[in-house]
Image (cartoon, rainbow, N blue to C red; front, side, top):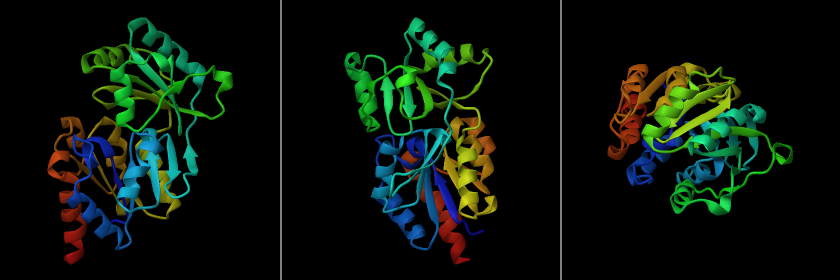
Length: 270
């Protein structure tokens, strides 16, 4: 099978735990791209913390960001598509977070807002800087000039386990998902990596059977099941591995490189 579009998750998949691209992974992706295959990063990150990796790989095309809530052109940074959510629906979640001392932020496609940015702890700032983001003070809803695409609660795993259990009992107007052990995201009900990848594939005239996706976490499930070939990393939870067509090595063992060699490069030699 010739794959014309390959979607890659970033954290826990494309990058090592040290948040770097290995030289071997870069070389393999560039070799496949030179043969005409398109790559898209499909991530919970914002454009500003994902586009630099596309440029490091020497790729243009698109990034699907905020777990599918926004798609951005790498070259022009134009927003191709975004799912705007109802900000007023976030108020009960924000009040819960304030009451239970859970850190949260609100995202437009390109900007990230928190309450009292000047009072953020060094730990919180380090987290944002790791993702190449600079938090801004959150204005009132009426003063937002861009659509809100994602709300994120962040904390330790056991704290977020409790939050997720509590919020799961609420009537949901949002798509709520765990985008990592330390994050819970709320987005528009129709926003997901799989939905955004499908829209992009249709825009490019590529059928699902010619799409390959590689990911490692629950927020990757929709794209793994949409793609003709969904590959889970070995560092994935069991449910993610079960939903995938195949499993590759971990992100620290160049699992993306190995999967691309096996299912793309080797298949071209047959």
